[in-house]
Image (cartoon, rainbow, N blue to C red):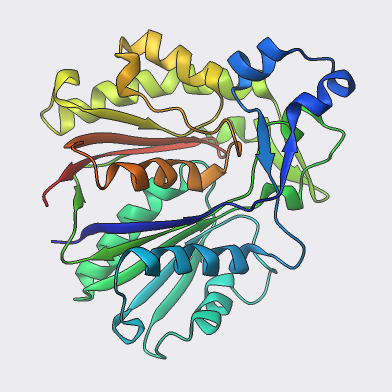
Length: 306
């Protein structure tokens, strides 16, 4: 049995306040607090990069749980903004962490759905190869590709990183998964010439159309009812998207965390940042669903066993 034992995280201390950008982008407090729900966005510090943020997330993990680096058998990094095109950033990270040479390392190019995809990948990879300890990193600093003059992205996305310790002594195990792609709509969130473009309305319509149906199918596949779920952990796209999903699915607001006010949408890190806070809680069952760039989605059920 393979699953999540612990999660470490890192969010840079550098912040940009959206209140300071109100005049520039012609927005008011209501838009900041109730539409996007992001008051400040985090930005990498000088000298930081994708791999460096991962190292700092790992340092945070080590403060929570004893880790014998020599026992780590695989390392997977979810990112679409690596240190460089070559080599894969997971190899750079492997060196920075001084992991054993017989440790498998590879990157996965996925965005908002990346953590859930990555969880399925690392579980399958470890089980197939008889592994007991692995690391699943997420680090996707959009600040590398954001145009500071673009309201749609500058006030929404923040930098951050997480690492999930995946072992044979887990706290949370996954159930059956759902996956999906609407590739014909990929241009709604795209980076060209190193500049990010997002059609906010297109992303909202995608989430509102597909996520409620996916939740219903996921619960049926896992033979569960809505009332069986303690928390619904959605990708933290924006407050407006989360509030809309709560209404369309008919969820209790208390069961749906929203926690990006102080750092923004961290792409593949947004879901594990929330799960990190639930590990020591009494939350028994969670739905985890990521959706966005691709356009793609992925979902699963996480059940506490320890």
